[in-house]
Image 1: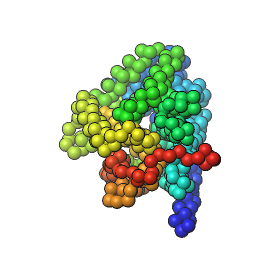
Image 2: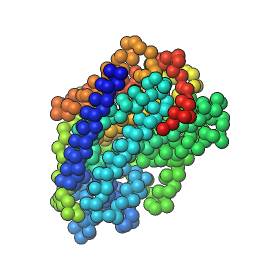
Image 3: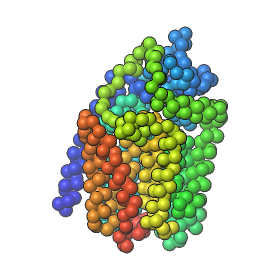
Image 4: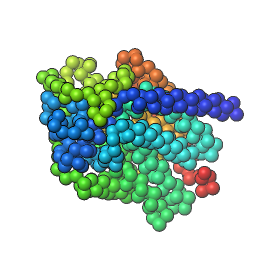
Length: 458
């Protein structure tokens, strides 16, 4: 009872932190221009309205400022947009509206996506946890999520810049929740996984299609399917492939497929440009677009946590894209080997599959030859929930204590001390270390997945 009371006190404090953060985000949205939202909006408009290639588009004063990105570099041939055509199609849902209106819609959307993700993850841990700790785990996920994610400096930065990472988080959370429902239905029917198709195929298909759509939006999430391939979840992987392919094909109904080639060329150029000291920056010369000063942005200290930048800081040398790709392949292969070495059984459950999937994805993100700014850390919400569930099912001991300590220390360093140089990078490393060590943790014999009674649903 005492521990439950402490948890409710922490939850109340976390809610107050989240409310204060919401107010701060509201003020920032009113004052700043959303520099990262702007390039997606203008690219979507260029592709949809002008029928031009948004990845190589250069604005001219003769054109409407609807297509102006004041932060574009006129000294290089490519535009600043770095997202694939699938994201541009999604952005087109609101791109016709005045930019000021879009800023407020995107503000509301980001918070809605964060809350939806938190709700899905909290309900997921409640459903899959043992009866004795289900409510506690749900409260922990909500409390930690509100405190360390919505209250963090990187979430302030995410909302003010108008970033899109939280949309990826919500899609992954939905895929996780639906997959757990499919496994629960199979277990409730007392049948081996994936045999009672008339009962379980719908949530499984929905989960796979959503994850496939996510991959089409953010390609590094393709690494999340490695554990499913490793443990022969081929039916699920086929749904993922169908989701990704369908998303690309639907995008092709609105934009020419040639845009995918332009996207690849632009990404390659910008990756190479980063390592070229001779690259210059020439401003468009205009700061205001559609009545908003896009160059007014929130100053939030933080480190570029990309592996390319870390190696540059340590050695003074830039590592090229080919070397990074080779290192990624080696790292991924080693992690897959050790995961299968410690968990050779094909009966690995939902939590371990998705925990490994997000670990593979987060590692892949570090190898991208592009800056990785703190707003990307909103993805931490996913492993945070999975770790809460994992720690509640693992045996007590040094490894479990180490995972818990690394997780909490990483969270505190990365969310609360952005003004202290390099500590955010240390926090990132500690949190990922907790994630990798958790994959090696042994579960209690009594904690194998058992679906809670259907009456437990709320």
